Length: 395
Image 1 (cartoon, rainbow, N blue to C red):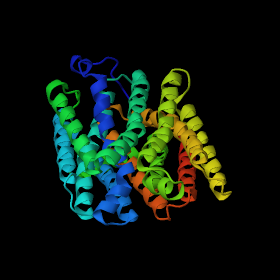
Image 2 (cartoon, rainbow, N blue to C red; image 1 turned 45 degrees about the vertical axis):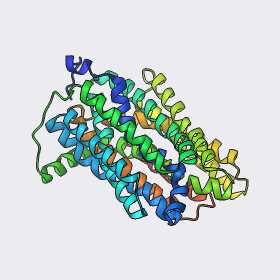
Image 3 (cartoon, rainbow, N blue to C red; image 1 turned 60 degrees about the vertical axis):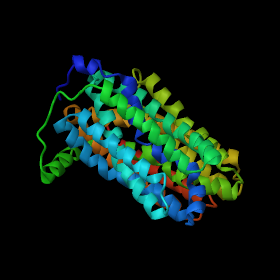
Image 4 (cartoon, rainbow, N blue to C red; image 1 turned 45 degrees about the horizontal axis):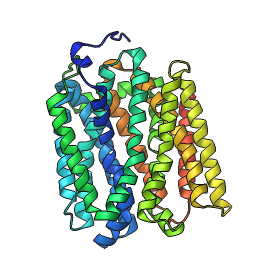
C-alpha cells in the first residue's frame, strides 16, 4: 500500500509524550483498582467473584467500545472524539467514588471503560498518523514501553492509596488525573487525521472490519497480539486473593508484587525498541512468544509440585511478562502496517480483539478457587500456544 514518507506540520506539532499519556490512561483504571478488590468486596458486603467481575466488566467495555471509536475518529477526526471519550471516562470515575453497592460500582466501571477505550484506539491511531511506515515500529515500541508502565506502577499506587485512605480514594485520585489530561488535550493537542473518511452505516462498518480480517498477515498479528497483550490479566484478576489468602501478603504488598511482574513487560518492550532496526517484526514476535510458553510451563510445574511461594510465583510471571513486552509492540506494528490509511479502524479491531481475549482469560482464571496458580498457568499457556499458531501464518 502507498504510504506517506513525511509528517504534516500539524502532526509534527502533536507531542509524542502527550499521545503516550493519552494511550496509557486507557487502562489505568483497570490496573490501579486491582489491589483494592478485596477491600471493596468487604466494604460492599459482596463476594470475591463479584469483585473480580469489576475487572471483567471493564474489559468487556474496552472491547466493545473500541469498535465504535475507530470509525468515528476516521470520519470526524481524532481530537473531538478523544475529548468526548475522556469526558465519559471522568463521569464514570466520579460515579464510582460514592458507589453504595456492587451493582452501582459495576455500572460505573462499565461507563469508565466505554470512555477509556477512546484513549487506546485514538492514542494508537494518532501515533500512526504522525509516523512514516519505517518509523511506525519504533514509535509503537516506545508507546508500548510507556504503556507497560501503567500496569507496572498502577497496582503499587493503588495498593498504597487503598491501604492509607480506602478503596474509594483510588477513584478520586484517578478522576483528578483524567481531568488534568483532558484539559491538556483540549489546550494543546492538534488534529492529526489528514484522511477523513465518510461515516458508513453499521453494515458498512462490519464490512470494513471483515475486509481487514481477510488480510492473512493482519489476522495473524491480530490474534497473536491479543493473546500476548492481555493474557496477564488472568493473573491480575486473581492476584489479590491468591497472594493474600494463600501466600499471606498484605494489600500494599500485592500492589508491589504486581508491579514486579508487569515491570517485566517494560523490560521486554525496551528490548523490542532496541532491536527494531535489526530484527524482523515476525522473528521478534515469535521469540517473545516462545519465552511466554516456556515461562507458563515452569509456573505450572512449580504449582503442581507444591513449591509455590511468592518468589517462585513472581519469577516465572516476570519472565512471561518480558515475552509479552517483546511480542506485543511487534504484533501491533505488523498489523498496523497492513492498513496505514485505516489506522483508526485497524486500531479499533485490535483493541476489541485484545480486550475480548482479556475478558475470556480473566473469566477462565477466576472461575477456579483463588488458592492455586494452576488456573493462571494453564490460561497463560493456552494464550501462548494460540499466539504461536497464529504467528506461523505471519510473513
